[in-house]
Image 1: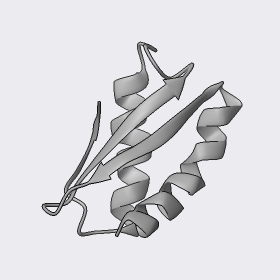
Image 2 (image 1 turned 90 degrees about the horizontal axis):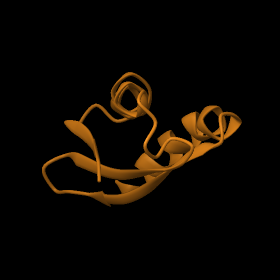
Image 3 (image 1 turned 120 degrees about the horizontal axis):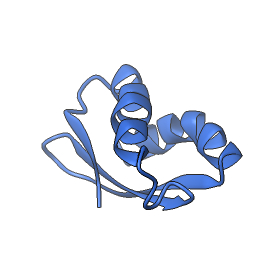
Length: 73
């Protein structure tokens, strides 16, 4: 499962990096929660929650329907 999530993150990573940010996979739990850390310009950005839910979570859920939620640590 972790490999599938990394592959999905690699699809959105170039968009984040274009704005000086990135995303790091921390954990995929057995109950379908993906834990990530936003880094670079994404860390502390006022729009980071929107980026997480409308971008990262949306892509991951499209690629891996069994994922329930994506949360930032």
